[in-house]
Length: 135
Image (cartoon, rainbow, N blue to C red; front, side, top):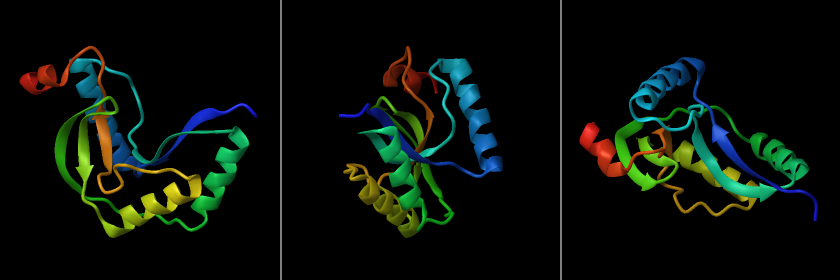
């Protein structure tokens, strides 16, 4: 079998929103540590594919997509590594349809299909209890 790598599909916020999120993320990292990552909404989670298959599936999925708006429901804290502190997004039909469409193209089963978010900080050297106590 050809070499596979782990891929995911992200929705990237517009430049101005991304910059505001990145500033907030930098502030949180300076206080609590944690890895640097770009602001994004994970539309398709980690999936193993060959590079060629990943590109083909992404191009195919993107043909039917258009930009969409999201609304933040609330700030939340979780216990999942990739969701320590995050912006929980309102389950807008277009957002949910985009996620379902992309998951179908990639053959990905999304267990959090109706719970999309934008992570602000991920776990590093602190626990959820520490973060909640400090905030």
